[in-house]
Length: 237
Image (tube, rainbow, N blue to C red; front, side):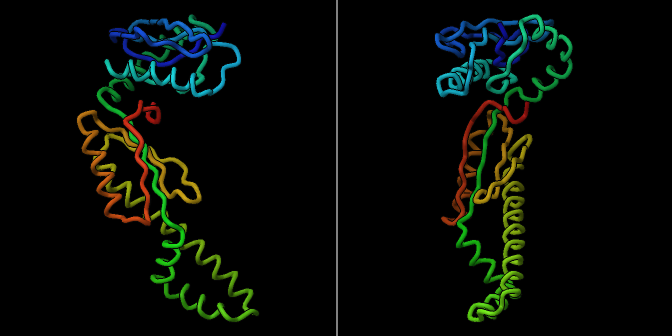
């Protein structure tokens, strides 16, 4: 049966896992696989495993318990190895890289920030600040024959919206990354102009949270910031 991998720690980690169970129904018993300086926390992999809330929470609970006692490399939900021997072989092969990454993550947590902007407010801002767009909009508004001009206006507005979203994302990251050890930006969506993760030292977590709240207040009601964390540092593994 395949081996389900929750996380990797140093071999001297306390591994206090009393009262914590693994994925599956019934929940799998946790065990460890060790190779020299590294230990993987694993269990049997249940057949037909899917990302149900119960199993995702079981995975998260194992990782969070480990993180409470020392540096931990959290694996993403659903990571499987062929068997314990193969997991041990990977630990042996990747000793140097895993030890280095554990040192980087020691004493850090992850925060996830999403930022979105009210579309109507953004368009009003573009109309107010861009003279060319405003003049073309006024010229084509009451002219039913101005098809080409309307197409040109649409392209100009689209480019301006993209540029403004990128600018706002860069500005926000510049403010927040000064309070973080590392930053990882994700793909922005249509209404979300920034998705980013920040690796923050444990003792700076409260200050980082305050900084995000202050930035949200400064930007006003038309810009919405969502802060999630502290979390296991999945984005930096």
